[in-house]
Amino acid sequence: MPVLPSWLTDPLWDQFAALLPDRPTVDPRHPLGCHRPRISDRIVFDKLLQLLRFGCSYEAIADTTCSATTIRNRRDEWIALGVFAQLKQVALESYDRVVGLVLDQIAIDGSITEAPGGGEVARRSPVDRGKQGLKRSGMTDGYGIPLGIVLAGANRHDSPLLAPTLGLLDDLGPLPDVITVHLDAGYDSDKTRTELAAHHLHGRIARKGEKAPIQASQRWYVERTHAWQNAFHRLARCYERRKTVVNAFFDLADTIITVRSLIRRAWTTHRWDKRPNRRR
Image (cartoon, rainbow, N blue to C red):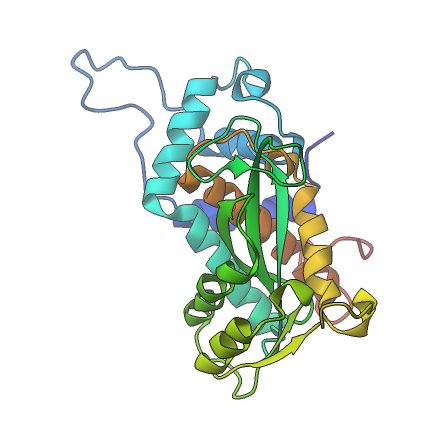
């Protein structure tokens, strides 16, 4: 059984392949002219999807078609080219064009996950007996489409991460004149309100000491997106040590979430050749 259904992986690969530069099958620089053929990019891409979904090691996912070293080398090559970030941007632009991003309502919240291998941004987790952990400050639109994350150590509070998270709005192009940011009680401070005012944003912040169901505002969308991201076990229990690699896997996961939501929401309004037989 494939790691993802073909109606999702096929459009992902088509766009990913369009972003890759041309590479010869055999390296012409080899002195004897008999170097082994280059492993297909599609094979490596499928391996990365398996890594992201199952969270296993590179050695466990490698087989006769592709070694663990090849997966790592190709991953780093694509990160250097910025392909994962470009793929996420294309997915967001496509979603905005077909369905429309709800940018007048923004939700931001933090989530702590395990990082057993440590790494550049991992720190002692206050909710896991001091083990190494990773915090991400995530931002979504009013439907829960992931717009970006900021990585930090698990011991960082949500509030100081608000400013760099709001800075991600600059990459989204034209924005509505009035934007409401939904935040939980952890952001209930004068510093948060000052930061929102500096960005000309309205804040809907839960009050400390007052019980309020998460459904009372549109903040629950970002909580659902965190759950979607944690369904990719590479992110829920991260063994990657380099920040650039972690960001690349988040970009790939966010792209999958965005394209999946696009297909589901466009199923009743659009028709295309490889449209699923039923709404997924």
